[in-house]
Image (tube, one colour):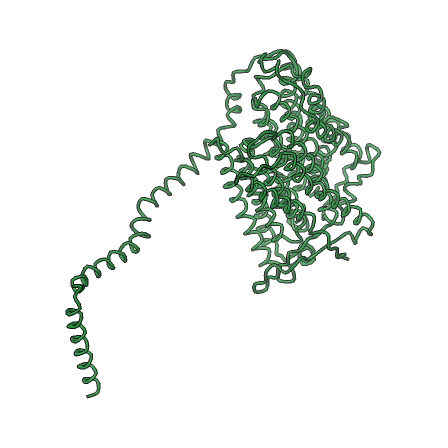
Length: 637
């Protein structure tokens, strides 16, 4: 049973309205009006905060309903109808979207508040908050859309906003190029999403194109069409959620301001692909081959990104590759049909990754926008709050019990092991150890040892409370969020998985207590080994390493960007130049130019008759009338 409520549409509308108001205010400042940063900051935070409280209302409304009736919907208007396809602008809140709404609006609100301090003094302060509100509103449309077409509106919205925000400091050409790269790579993935929707509509029939109708009619899909639909939708997910081979845009997205990195990498855009696969669990659960591909792509991406993360020297790029790696874990979870485990990792990841990025921003601001970890050191005494909170975030990311990341990551690995994907589990354990290594390599180099830049160290100071309070709140979430889905082996009841049950169609493997203990033990051992190696190498003062052999290969990220540039970009540019030099002037422009030439020739030919004398024109009239009279007389005879 679906309950109709009218307030769902206001959840994305509030930040979208904020984006409009802030945008108009910024245009006014461009015309010479004076508007204070304080007003911009307050108006920029109102929409996200109100959306969070409305998301709480949705959550408690659903909680008060029987489990099988936890569906709230609202149709704002009929968007368009064409042929058999009737698409309303509708919103759907169920247990899955409610969880997404909660942490998207909560973490998004904290990032907006943090931005008040981080962006202070920027000439485009109001423009930044307008874009940030637009980004959040688009993400909420993506989450709340009652079908894939409405989801696609938000999907494209966050893609546009990522372009605007990554290249926000457009004075630097590299930032603009990073924004372009994100936009273009996402368009490749989006083509897969559009084709997947087309095949889905064609294969499932015309009994409704919202999620509930699609789920009810999923049996109409034949196995081959179902496989094609699942793989095409996953192509869209690889673009948005940065999986092989479309992951290359995400590390470059670090060109944007740090709050943008936190918003994109933690709770919003990059998790959209995982959410989409979970939303279509009723398709993927019936096409095991597609799930296998999703799981393997996810785990191989996790491994590749972890290798790259071990060699990065930019504090934000270390976290960027950790995001790609953690997204790989999420896809491995949904790929082995453990959809609730994948979404649970999305949930916990939002807290500790937002925390890590915002803490990194605090370090960067303290060091006057320095991002190279080899120019840092000894900051533990200068930035005590930032250090403590970043340490908590690092422990959660590395999978240290009992922090949030341990429980969600372990559930994915256990699900892979219990469902027979032993090799995926083994790779996942190795990646967990690598994650612990590069996370604590960063923490030891940045906060321990001695300062590498004494002048920058002397001027460093803790960030203001408007920045550190969000860090503390996110640190609390990074500690306790994992207990919401505590497994039976730790005395829990997996409340998170039970909450999501009405929204997902998943397989629950039963591997037994012994198998679960094995999975937990392996994860803990991997964490200890990774941290131990990092401690031995980097807890003492150490110079910036010079890489050789495979390490140099890893430092340059296997030259994947250079490979793409050689194999894809340069041939594309060559074809474009060939078209501009040959086809455009001789095939496209030639007929247009020829028609213009003919008009000119006709004009020149008849120019001789334009003498400019009335008597000459009178003679032309007499001649014309004579010829006309002759023709008429001939026709009458």
